[in-house]
Length: 161
Image (cartoon, rainbow, N blue to C red):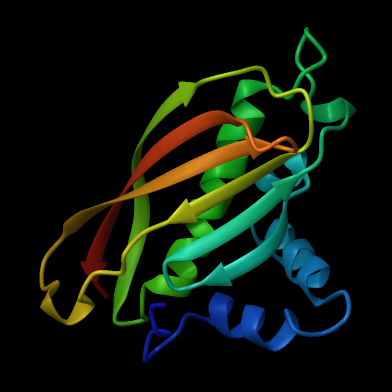
């Protein structure tokens, strides 16, 4: 398992402070939505966050429905982007910064249940990263039955701070 960055972000420090407490992951998720209000539309719950891995759940509720009463494709993209963002916040040290650059998405099946987005990456050697570098984060979005309904590859741009 990858180790924590030697200079973790404020977001990851907050996760480590709150996640082990009763209701802490919910409080953290609410704080994340307050900081980035756009994500509140999908009510994300960060359930796991560590270097190289993040998991976010998204409920199936009225405001993410499409005309078929399934989870809208873009709501799935929001879940994927939230998982990627939490992974990057846990993985990238404060010696570097990151921003999403591109997203490639495959819609594989109808999303008829709540979803879980899992982002994973093998953390690079940030000490060797002396100029801008693309880092692709694969994200799998699965339904309650474990069926992958969306797959996203999110390209991030990482630079020294």
